[in-house]
Image 1 (tube, rainbow, N blue to C red):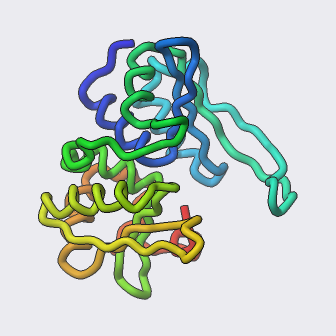
Image 2: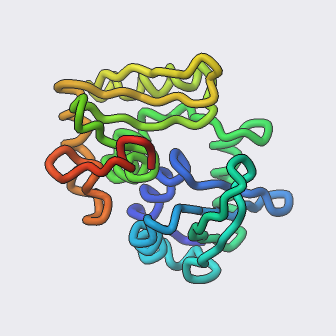
Length: 209
């Protein structure tokens, strides 16, 4: 699997966000991306940017939510299995759990990778005039690693976790929010610009992504 630098940047941002790597064999892995139906344009963009790694065009699927038991629709992309993705699996996963690479500061220093992560897991709160990035089930050490990485970019942020630690997020405010958004704004696609303060922010974006 041969990737351009741009494709590598998009892939790294995706792995910080919603991308999932599944081990296939001793040295290979494959990438799976799933988004809600309302983000079809975003999935299409990822497919166009990374078309050579995917087995097929985006697939429309439906399933029952395990908690609410409601039927919902989503879109999936799945890649070919490859050793390059296998190496990324070792870098981003420990004991079967997604983790934060030690070189996270280098990844988020790339505006395109950071923008993809924000398009995946970020949102803008119009009421508080603040930006946020949802975090997966990372531990306290990993969250501090992310915060330190942003600090080295001159962007200060704080983490808030629910008491049960089932959900955490990074909060960016004031000038630090502006620094973050200035970095990523040129790379946000039109359909995801509702996550910026200058565009209308929907109720959905304030609840989640």
